[in-house]
Length: 145
Picture (cartoon, rainbow, N blue to C red):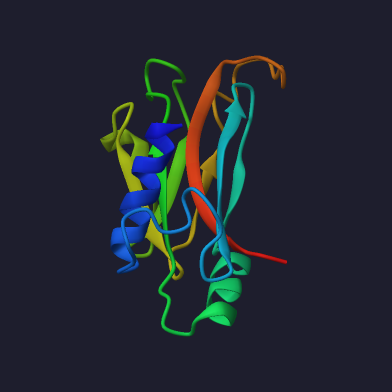
């Protein structure tokens, strides 16, 4: 839990908010959804995209908010999986940023960043309930309903 709060504090710093903003309870109509994403070996992936919903909801709460998404790297390429992994558009090319990350690093993107996950170990059997593959942690702000 504390690790996710630290990642949330990075997000809050980037947004010019108080260190513990919306980490323990809803504030200013926003709350934090801390979660783990698993992309299993055998083809786990996420199509490259831009986030649209979370930034839009933040703008509805306060138009001065700038959207940043820190991603906690919770696996290590070439140790937990061999091919694929997190990508981000840089200079017109999708770059597998986990080629440059270690377990515990934080990658950050903003509302304009195209990002996703290239197929993880496509040459391996796909077993969704397996714990093998790529893991990442996120702490996204959502609007209270």
